[in-house]
Image 1 (cartoon, rainbow, N blue to C red):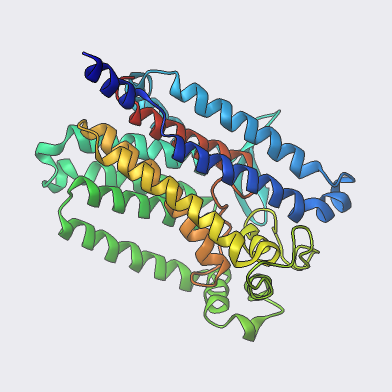
Image 2 (cartoon, rainbow, N blue to C red; image 1 turned 30 degrees about the vertical axis):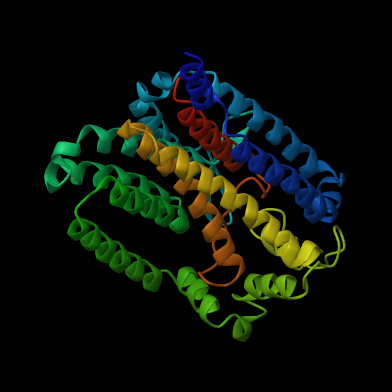
Length: 370
């Protein structure tokens, strides 16, 4: 009898290494936001702690969100999948109205009065919840194109089109990658996925060629130092930051690229500032924590007997993985420049709350008795 209770306790217990890794990244993110944003915040806001204080509030709300998700029944999320999904589509559509905040030629944020949010982050969660539900319910028809593959393809396409209208080319690519990877895990026919990849790549190529600013980004990615003062400026400054970090870095707060050389140092290029100030050791700590999060998340997901639990957990882990991978790839010049935050480290409330929800849900799935 005691063995049964012990087994139940293990199933219901939180995965502490996963939670600890998240807390370490959050704490490191607060330090790096403080370091990378202080000079800019002082100049434009008159308060060197402006972004740090906001990020601290986001972190507290994120921890409360993890706690809330853990204390809600999974049925609450699974029975409201379509509300989450179509709600995220609605939010994406509202960015194209007067509620959308236009900045840098794009309308990617939504003004809700007291706060502003980036609907892309909600769309990532909504898409994963929908795909986890759909693929688990359609397993017997998954190999058929019209029933098992076309509906989620069309819904993902609608989301991607709304993002392209903002325009947010990188966000559309993110959702398409998420759809393709989760479809692969669910067992979709490889021929369907191959055709989708070819079609997506062809459309992406056409859009890059037809849009001058996208073409400039692509050329800057290929030859950044030939355009060091124009289209390749961000990438060159990012590489300078990483290259000057060495093993232990210049020291926390001692970096120079954040002094108005590297745009969006506290957000889109925070990993470059971290590499400059904390060096290879700091970068290694970040990716060690990320590795723990991903390993534990996939372990939790893959041991689930319920297919919806398994697919939802894997999908949410992929949200974290893709965010970290693409941010690092941009900072290192491996993909064309695109503003993507690093999970739990970059400044920003929408992304931090989305990542917190993802981890909370994965921890929830790991507590099999709940």
